[in-house]
Length: 117
Image (tube, rainbow, N blue to C red; front, side, top):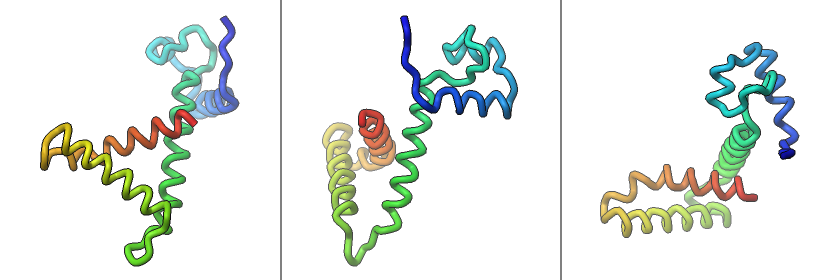
């Protein structure tokens, strides 16, 4: 069966091969790409790395515009999202115990949302 691959698959694997040499058979087996010459990372890992980079860059850029005095529309939306996640955590986990999980849950939300775009 033919599988479509992303445009970054070959360049990123070529970069890894250039920097690190050929991947070992054990590494390829662990990554699920056994028998594919010069392949360090499968396509889904390449795309996950792309999503991590995109989300990080966008949130760092967005953070520059945040202000306590005059919050932007984006800042208000993000605060509302995080407040909702915190309240959901408080309801599900218990009062006083949900707040520590907000950063992790918010990271998952941003990653999954961006991955599905």
